[in-house]
Amino acid sequence: MKYIKEIFVTGFSLLYIMFLVAFIKSHTFNDKYSDQQPVWETISPFFSPPEKFKDEFGDYRSPLEFYDGTKVKTIGDWHLRREEIFGRWNEMMGKWPPFIENHQFELLETIKKDGYIKQSIRFEWLPGQKTDAYLLIPEGTGKRPAVITVFYEPETAIGKGRENRDFALQLAKRGFVTLSLGTTETTNSKTYSLYYPDIENSQIQPISVLAYAAANAWHLISSLPEVDSERIGIVGHSYRGKWAMFASCLFEKFACAAWSDPGIVFDETKGSSINYWEPWYLGYYPPPWNNTWRRTGIVEGAKGLYPKLVEEGYDLHELHALMAPRPFLVSGGSSDPPIRWIPLNHTIAVNKFLGYTKRVAMTNRPEHSPNEESNEQMYIFFEYFLKHN
Image 1 (cartoon, helix red, strand yellow):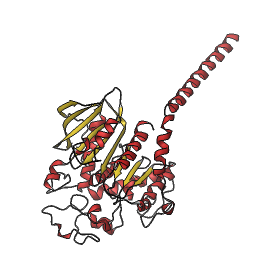
Image 2 (cartoon, rainbow, N blue to C red):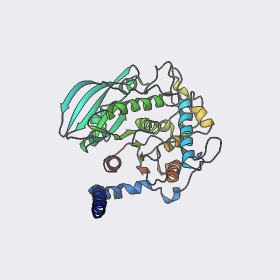
Image 3 (cartoon, helix red, strand yellow):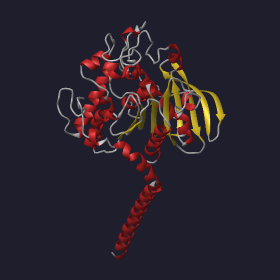
Image 4 (spheres, rainbow, N blue to C red):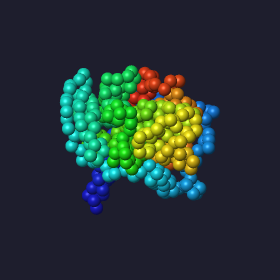
């Protein structure tokens, strides 16, 4: 009996020691990131609306109500509501083909840079359609976070274009694997977007085709041995901010996202900057395209899906809600001023319902173009949520 008691006590002591070691390790892990407190202190204000916009919801239809008006009351209800939003929008915009998951990309060129390796690659991002892109892989070992960047062509984001748009390069210098994408051919032809199966017979609204291509790019970058598939974000500016927004909202494997002044809701008073009625966004119809109906204000003559969305009360805040509880940052400029907190409050409400806070952020600048300050805010956002949180 004595020995049994000793064995029991010894065994209990060992279990207690194991628990204590695990507890200390977990707290040591957290302490390892205690130096990130200044980072959080920097970005924390981005997650709070100005007092005059706090709890203002405007005329936007609540994501916490089903389309028939029934209120979401439980977490289970929210999952059903989320499926309803996702299903409705995909039905209206056109359903995606199966993902391209097993990528065998072509390596066109490898150049060693200061602190990272640049690889020119070619891969299939739509069924039967390949694109050229750039991979920037920082030096080092182990799995790292990654960010996909999108623009008119892939060169700008790696530092070969306009100022303050080199997102892929700057993030690579901070230790992120980056994949720079662009729509070079359609930019040159001024058709701007992607079309599936082709521009004459697109079965999907073009902005959704772009989102689908980004999802396929996620499958590519997530398969790399250098990348942690749980820590992949996406970022884009202006038109490509729209691309990043639709991709992250419609494809839930993006861990977080930053949208630089895309126009996060429909706003016809902004003219050409928030022009979702264009045939390369949500107003697709087969070419030839007649642009004479394009004008600021109510878009008389707009075709495709866009007029239906507006008439039936849909707006993009419903897609934002699909991000919850994943964090996102709106890097707002002239297209997305502080008043955009009103639609964003709806996603804040969804996060609050789910038990999350500080997941919806916005910064603001007067101009549409990004600048050093707004870019630094985006980079710190990615560092906090993909590296340390």
